[in-house]
Structures are given as structure tokens and as C-alpha cells.
Length: 383
Ligand SMILES: *Cc1c(COP(=O)(O)O)cnc(C)c1O
Image 1 (cartoon, rainbow, N blue to C red):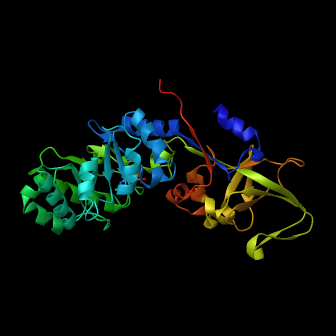
Image 2 (cartoon, protein in one colour):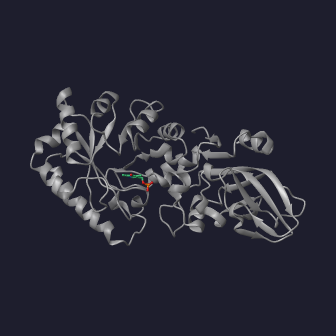
Image 3 (tube, rainbow, N blue to C red):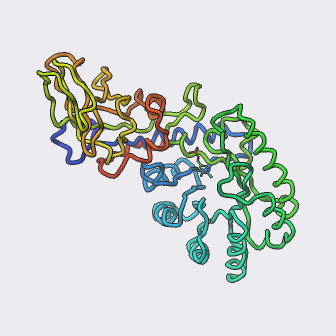
């Protein structure tokens, strides 16, 4: 905490980047523990750390979650898997949602990575690779239960079931599917998907008696205990998003973003602000120009609905967000006060609030917090 405050106290001149992104690893750990402790008996929480842990840094987030007991990690690609493997102890199970692309099967086996098999050709390729090394290798089988994204259709599953030897040769240790509408608890597709999942699993279990099951992402977990099975796959909720939109958020906020003020200007004559001269400003007004723009993930679609805060006072973005700069209207601040920093994400200004105000997806907000910020990771020692 001290180094963080120290840095901000130096004022904008002390920072060479566009802004300071503070990531509270202890909050991510607490969120994982909250979920893991809430699960039905026998169920366990994995962690989804794809897309560099939703932009927050898989190299930091993965090990932090390992330290509190997480052992299963989902990423999207082989490249992501290799990157996080560097930082995780050997007993961590790294599961690649995007599967093994043709020709990569051998690398998965030698590097000890688990592919998600989501099509018949992928199953066949994995089976061949397993036969080549002479033993089944751990894999996960993904079923499409109604989202029509990745996963075996029911026809493909029937073809698999017609050759049950293949199921064993492929080392299938996990059967999974993914919910399309888990954040809408009353959506009928949820139960339909669950029903299809049960039907498929009943048949698969005859050949794979001990196989583990997984259906829920963050919001799916909060549909209730009968959605937990053996393994849940939270991503967004670990990073502070509310898994139950419209209800109180059980998660702790994780990110704080502070942008340094480069210039405070008094507007003496009414005119317009920013590119396109699209936004009028009435004199007298005070504007603060901060370092940080759409190249830093402050997407232009956030536009004029975006908020910042100085102390307790909320302020508005004015004019179009540019590549490296954003302008805030600070006319309402007490006269004579020149802020050195404007905070755009914190405990009150959460990703969920940004989502509600601007219509951006929380996932987009986090994964776009690009590479130009100075990053600070906070972690309390484990007691
Ligand atoms: C991204 C992803 C998750 C995590 O979803 P959240 O909504 O972020 O919790 C879980 N399962 C699969 C298959 C995914 O692609």
C-alpha cells in the first residue's frame, strides 16, 4: 500500500506512463475463496485466466490464486498456456479452452497441458496422439448444449458413443459445457442446456464412470448448487464483476485506475471541446486534460457517460476521448483546486458501474486496459 500511495503522492510528474493501474491480488484471492467456500459439497473452483487474466496479468493472478489453493486454470490458447505454465508450480492443471490445433497435439502432451476437445476431428487427432505415445493423456470433452459455439453436437456425441473404446483412449477426465444466458437466471435456455447436459452425461458415464463434470461460469455458479457439479469455471467474478446483475455484488472490487492530469485550463470564452468540435462548453469552465485515452482502453464508446472522481467529487468526461488524452470537466471542483490525478476506476467507480452507465461490457472494459499503464500489484501476506 505504501509504495502505491507514495507513487501517487509524487504527483503526475512522478509517473512516466499514461496512468497507474493498481490490481488488488488479495481481492482476487478473496473472491476465489468466497466462490470456493460457497460451492455444493464435492465441487471445486478452477480459475479462468484467459486473455492474460482478463487483462490484469496472468503471470501475477495465476500464482496468487495458486497460493490460496486453486489448482486448475483455464486459458484460451497454447500460447497463453505456455506463458502461465512458467509461473505455476508443476501440479497446476492448465486446460486450454481453444483446444489443440492440428499438429499441436504432441506439444500438449510433452508440455503436460490439457486440451478441450470440442469436435470429432479434434477427438480423432487426440486419440491418434495418445496412441502414438502409448497411453491415454488427460483431456476435457466439451459438449454444445445450445450456445452453438464450441462443442460436440448431439449427433457427434452419438457417433462418439458408437465407439466407446475411443472415449477411454482419449483420456477424457472432464466433461463440460458452457451456458449462454447464465446472467439471466429466468432464461429458459439455462434449464434446457442443463437438461441436454444431463442426457449426454448419463450416456457418457456408462463408459467413463469417474469422469468429472463442469457447467458453470461465474454467473452459472450463482444459479444455485445444482449447477456446480465437480468443477466451476469462474472468470469475471474473480476480477470483481457482479455475477448476479441487479443484486448486491458479493465480490470485492479489484482494480483502481489513476490518470495523471497534464493540464488544467480555464475556459474564458464559450466554444467546443476536443476532436470534431462536437461538444459545446460554456464559459466560464475548467477542464482537466489527463494522460490516457482509447489506446489505453478508455474506449471511445464510453464517451461522455464516463465518470472520474477527485476526492469525493464525481466529474464527467467532456468531448471525444482521444488516443492518448481524455478531458474532464472539473468546473464543479472547489475553486483554486487543481487535481493532480483523476481516478476512473476504484471501489465506488466499479467496472459494473461503468458497464451500467455506458453500455460497454464489463469484459470489454477490463480486457482493454492496455499495456501503457504502470501496474502495481497489491497482495497481503497469507496468514
Ligand atoms: C470465459 C469462459 C468462462 C469464464 O466465464 P466468466 O463469465 O468470465 O466467469 C468459463 N467457461 C468458458 C468455456 C469460457 O470460455
